[in-house]
Length: 134
Image (cartoon, rainbow, N blue to C red; front, side, top):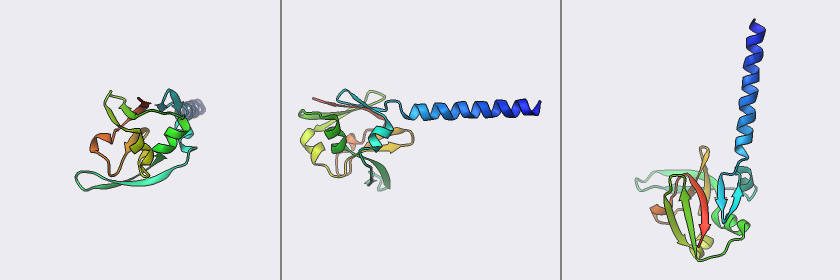
């Protein structure tokens, strides 16, 4: 009887671990119609960026340089639009996005967020799921 419970427990654990590995490879971000998984983003190279919020708290985020993501997706246009899972949108000029050397798509506890030091607080989009170009 104990062997059955141990076996069932191991089977459940392996199933859950397999589901987690599969979930990591699903698309987490769409950029100009191209889908990226977290591993696709990480393959572009990561860096750490410090962001100080309006209350003076500084947090270090790790992510991918926004300009690297835009270059990889081979997008062109005048405006970059960031869309969160709840429908919130923020936009910035493409030229500013490409010139920003510390604007990143950051990995944030299973989701993504825009970390844009020295930019408007409105651009700090949490749970970003799409970057489109107009």
